[in-house]
Image 1 (cartoon, helix red, strand yellow):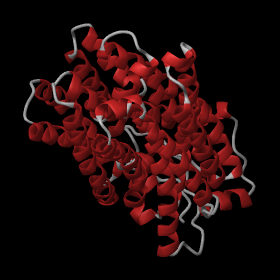
Image 2 (tube, rainbow, N blue to C red):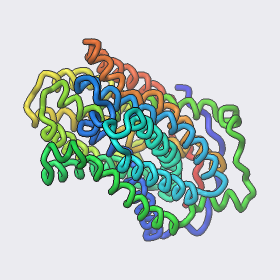
Image 3 (cartoon, one colour):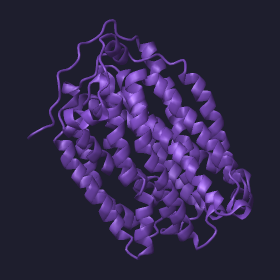
Image 4 (tube, rainbow, N blue to C red):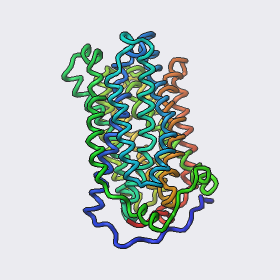
Length: 440
């Protein structure tokens, strides 16, 4: 079977990192990644409570549709952030890009916590909300590429799948933390208090945590791969050269991310609303189901990453997409028939375990396709573009199909995307053997 071409691997550097130094780097990168994604997902986790404050007209579905549109708008800034931070990370270093991205996220989170609602300032409220989400989008667009490359370059060849899986594990942990804050606030505040002002608390928490992470990241070590490339005088190429020099790798990352992001937001962030709006569960029950499934999802990432070090990341990714194409329609249909909470939890858990075939290995696979001097840009830009088009519109598309009385078409949409991604994954090179990362 034809595969994507890759260049020659870079020569290893000596001496390699000690186990303790490697773990410290992974932990440091992971902490920031967790906080960044907590700040991002706090929006979708609390949308059920603040939607009417910014969009007071219409029923619950209409309000959620408008908040989902703002969620999608935030994604439009992510390609710009990926482009700017990707270039910055390839020129100034991974650490510099990581600290810049978390500073932007802190500003966006504090802004959402402080914006007056529609009753106080009218149309300016949703406008300011959009601006704050654009700032967060710029931040997260840069965060993904910088953290994926940093953690992958720090992982070491023999356990690259295992260690780099913590990039997505902490992404899920960020989403889970947002849900955990929601559960705590649901237990401490009345529904009226939570809807009136309590929804602002998680954004204030996120802004404060981002300040702490900024300090942590400023002390991280730079990757051996970047330092070696800079010492050799390697210069980052212009953005246009990415497609000219690595077109198939760039398009492969775009295609894989289209399906991976669409499925991720369908199975996780939209599923919480699906459980309430379609399956008829209460908000509290839907939150508990989602939190339980996300715990399963988080814990399975290192296991899948570890397996990929032995059986190949290409094989793991193709299997995950293939199973997802088969399971999506029956899984959503079963949940829509209003099963017991335990059945809904089991089905959602099955979906996210299947998706782990992509999520646990995607950082390593993407980073392994590019040489050091353009790795951050090569990973971040096609990822962010695909994420904006398919991930950012997942909730909107789902609610649009529902409002039009054809909700099941959304299940088909996700399944087809995953089937196409399986074909792309099968054409990848065996990155376990052909990876272009300088040994750390």
